[in-house]
Image (cartoon, rainbow, N blue to C red):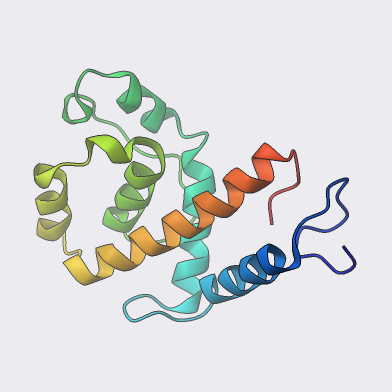
Length: 139
C-alpha cells in the first residue's frame, strides 16, 4: 500500500486498518484529559522501555509482584507513579490488583489519570503487537 503508516511491507494491509492505526497513532501525541501531548508521547516510550526493563522481568518471574523491589529502566522524566503504572500495565497487567491501584492513588495518581494511561498503553501494545506479528518496524 502506498504511503502506509507501516511503511514498505511485504503484506497487503487493509486500508481501513491502516487508516485506523494512523489515526490512533496521531492521537497518542495529542493532549488528553489528564496528560499533555508530550507526556502521552513519554508514556509511549515507557511502554517500549518496559519490554526490556530488568525490574519488570524480575517482578513477572516472582510469585507476587509485591515481593520484589527495585527501579524501572526508564525512558522519560514522567512521575515515578506514571512510569510504574505504564510498566505494570505493559508487562504484568493480569496481576494488577486493588492494592496496586490504591498504591498509585496514594502516590498521587488519580483514577482518571490512570484510565488515560491504560488507554495509551493498550493502544501502543495493540499497534506494537501487530508490527511484531508481521515482523515490521515499530512506528
